[in-house]
Length: 411
Image (cartoon, rainbow, N blue to C red):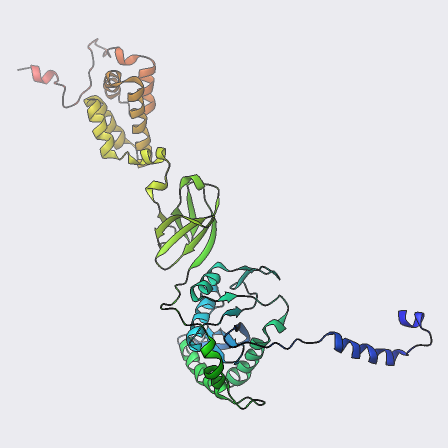
């Protein structure tokens, strides 16, 4: 309508549309990508799945199909996996490298969370575990652009081939395990790679051996050990939670954000890319692993006071203090309450001295005292220097093994 308003004698609607369509074809052109040997590997999951039947219940679960295609030779790898999580994603890449017999210079994945944490056209944030695997094998990860399937056209074509030549061929078969399904996939995959191209007088496997494989980087001496990465905030108790287990970090990091790297054997905590703690990996859910050196000095000193050590200290102060401490330890139902009361007695001894502590505990024993507050009250009021008398007027002394009673003197 705008065109006709500007050019009343111009093209009519039908002719205008024909020219518009011709022009659009020239604008939306496709870049034909030339892939160098050994340079790129394209990876993705197929849209179709394969059924796995539980032999006991008959319930059918869906297995996902991982597909990897080398750029220059179109040599294809495929396998069934139970989940599309990060460990499975990384393990599939490792098995693909082994299948190819080498490592490409670049891996081009989709922008799934197992590969990319945050997509960006220029500097995407890669999944740390996936990046760690790539560093181990000496390859780079360059994800395809978001909503740009032509960036990974090779694997898109590879997915179609796998769906048509493998999954379609297996659609009427029943599998009772992932392993059984992968055996069948492997057999058909070999046939796919051995098929001749329609326009080139060679197959994928021939191009792999003559063109691609000599350009691939060598496999490392050992497989990559999967490392699970997490972020955590250090709690007020200087512990972080990772995989449902608590691990300690230096108390100075309380409130900070840290990275956690979990292997099968070790749990490492990093702060600003520097390792600050390392523990043996524990799989006890709800458990706690603590390095005593991570505690502040005051906490270390607090935890060093065990019942036996408290009693030994009390005995050096005097028999009445030792008897009072033993009474407190035996009178409280919860250990933490006992320790705190005894630590209070120790503080009183430092504050008032041993000379006053013994008479105060003697008075407390005689009156049935079993608490820190009562001993403190005796000392604050100066009752430790006042003799305690019975109703008959006789002086009452504490009863313990070092004091001889009236029965001793009857003879």
